[in-house]
Each structure stands twice: as structure tokens, then as C-alpha cells.
Length: 134
Image 1: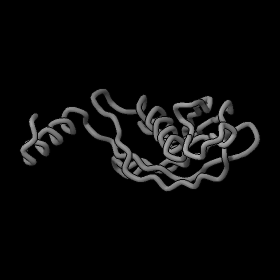
Image 2 (image 1 turned 120 degrees about the vertical axis):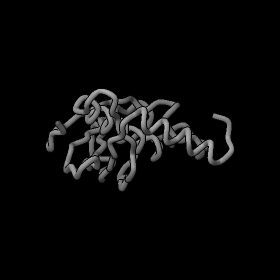
Image 3 (image 1 turned 90 degrees about the vertical axis):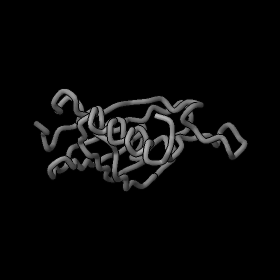
Image 4 (image 1 turned 45 degrees about the horizontal axis):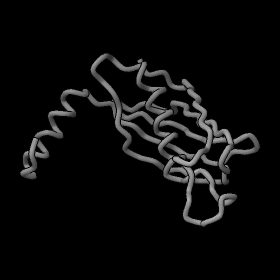
């Protein structure tokens, strides 16, 4: 059963693999927006997954977030996800990211619950329709 109000938090350290590098100065390296969004999605998936029946998982369908502040390399960032609503197989989350000083990101994320084997078969058939090797 999916529990509205359930919360999960996960923390990462901003390091090379999740930081921007296009500004050219080491002190300008901060958590990249796509990486912030990815960790919001991962935290939401990890919150929802244990509530699902065996053989089910979820896929992201909507992300609506603002990147409010910069988290430099070495900073710990905590991602928080809370289940806000459930509509059939659609689950909506309130998500946020905080460093040690402030909120650096916030918004909503939506995931859709799928039966893993049926989803995989649907993707296999789609690839076959496009004449790709399956």
C-alpha cells in the first residue's frame, strides 16, 4: 500500500562526477542541475519501491523543480521526497534538496507504477516496430 505522507531522505557529497565543469575555475564547480533532478528522482523511487508488490517498479513521468542555490564541491546535499498524492498508478511527490545552509532546490515529481515484465515486453515490441534488433 502506498502511504501518503511517507518521507525518505538521501544524502550525497558534491564531487567531480555530479558537478559542472564548464566555467573553467575550480571554485565555480557546483552541483549540476541535471544531477540534482536525478537525485530527486532516485530518492522518490527509493521511497516508493518498498511499498509496491513484487514485480512492480516505477518510472518518472513529470519533473517540475527549481534550482534555487548553488552547492559547491565538497558540500553535503540532502534530498527529501514526500508522497503527496496517489491517483491509480500515478504517484506525486514533493521534493527538495538542501545543503548545510539552505534549500537549494524544490518542486514536484511524478512517477508511474509499472509491472516490470509487461513494461519490458512493451519496450521490446516498440523496438521491433522500429526495426531495431531485439
